Amino acid sequence: MMSRSSNPPSVSTTFPSLGPSDVHVWFCDLPRYADDHSALAALLSGDEQTRAARFAFDRDRQRYILSHALLRLLLSRYTHTMAAQIRFSTGRHGKPAISGTSAATEDIQFSLSHSGPYALVAVAKGRALGADVEVLKADADALKLAQRFFAPGESALITTCEGEARRHMFYRFWTAKEAYLKGKGVGLSLGLDRFEVLFEGDSSLARIRWTDSGAFDPGWHIRSLSLLDHLAGAVAVQGEAWDLHQLESTAYSLY
Image 1 (spheres, rainbow, N blue to C red):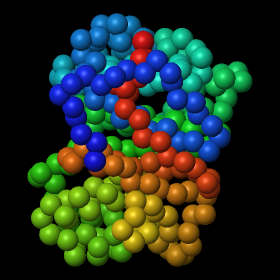
Image 2 (image 1 turned 120 degrees about the horizontal axis):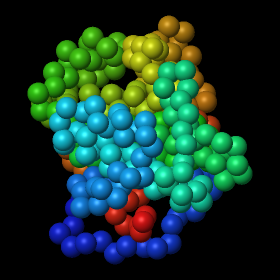
Image 3 (image 1 turned 180 degrees about the horizontal axis):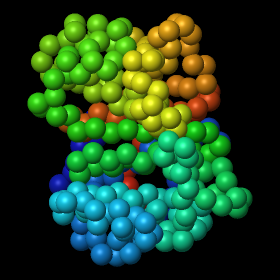
Image 4 (image 1 turned 120 degrees about the vertical axis):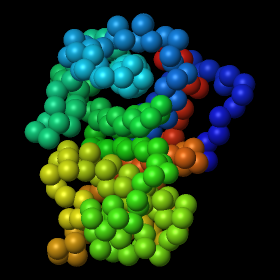
């Protein structure tokens, strides 16, 4: 598990390179950027600022602004583009992508997720991916939710757990399924019970199996992430032979 340090981490000015087999997953602790809120808000597009203004609560508005500004800052380092100049387009079900076909941007794929005061940004080159992070909610009825939305095999596994173990198991499946749907770019239109996440024993690796046919989706693999104790996270990546690199945004100079 990642742990917070009471001392400021050393900041690297050397940004990690992204190879064809690399998957970078950035963990962002949003409150650490609160002092730079105004400068970061200025990086957002007009549409993003309009969307931010619709939030009823200042806390949610600030989290939206910080997470989307950090996404821009990270993507600017990969694409060698000014953060404020990055433009996005959306697919049929709302999956975002970088607009433009320059050599620096055409192969960069990304996924943003945020929950509470945290965000994840996953980035890869030439392969689709999706990421999800969730703060574990103490009042979540894990078994009831699993029986309503999950595949039968997943619900059965959650039933065998009790207390905290059940809650962690539920969110392990939930984030894996959300990451897969985001990576495919289909949203919840597919249905969470249409496919089953099969973890390989006690490992963090998982595959996808369709509940109707029993066939596996050979093009996608999932990895649960090691985060803070009260968080669950996962990344779903298209293709074989990729290497996961978990990174913390505060360890690098982004602006």
